[in-house]
Image (tube, rainbow, N blue to C red; front, side, top):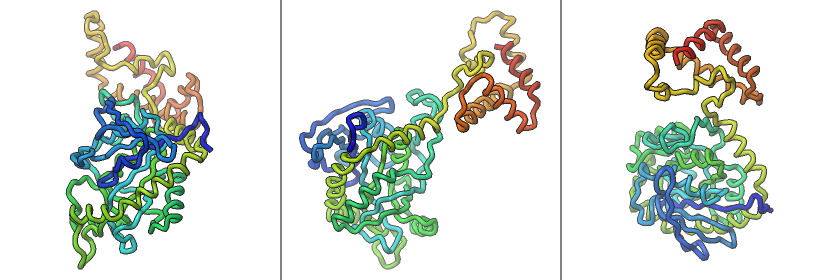
Length: 375
């Protein structure tokens, strides 16, 4: 049973034709803004069998937002800000396998990213972004525990469901060429869509359990003697089978809310903490200067200091980046080995890195002193 400290709140991102707000009881709309802009539409707050839920139409209520232009970061940020612990999504997809027929449900477990124009992290150095860098693992992109609930529910409801599948996410909004479709099959992909990436990646960064109910609507365009995918065909299949995805959600959500997710949430939090590292936070006082950006150097410094700074930058232009790279690597090594960033451990990690690269610790120290004097 979910405890009060770890109460479940489910975010639902509805895809094309699968974003009906009527599934919520006592619903209200909430328009919000985020550091990354506005979400696709208003958040619809309500309950499903007494479980707090937040519904968001991925492409907007009128389906006016193309896949490339979906503000994925704002969408995930908004759901996180509303306290969502889980995100269940629906998505239309094309089948790349004979066995996955139009109308079938696939609970996807892997993805191949073929997008090219989308922000995939909250930590990309932009003015609104979170500080540092996050190298989030993607070996298991989807929440295994949540997926298992969806699979069991689909089977119990008698819905034809495939318990795993790899999705290729393409940029869109165009559909695949036949050559691309055949290539995706050779890669071992099972279905193709336009929205799983970066949605699942951002949810993982946000520490939210994410799972997807994919609805196969067609055979894309790889299959001979079969009508190629079209918007009309997709919408027709969705209209005929939307109730399958909705029934899965309505049945799974109260079951998810009744489970204990403490360990899952702790693992997500720990995974994020192990994946994220910020620029050095004063690990050793002598290295404070490394944190200072060139633009932070006082512009009205004495003439003598200006000459020092210029002389250093001309004669040793690589040292700054070299020193910072070594320091970042040292911090990463300490975290991977679960060691504290003490001056002693930090220094040992720096010298170990220098030895590994067959470089002289004395030359590194000389570079530090030169940079320090220059700044």
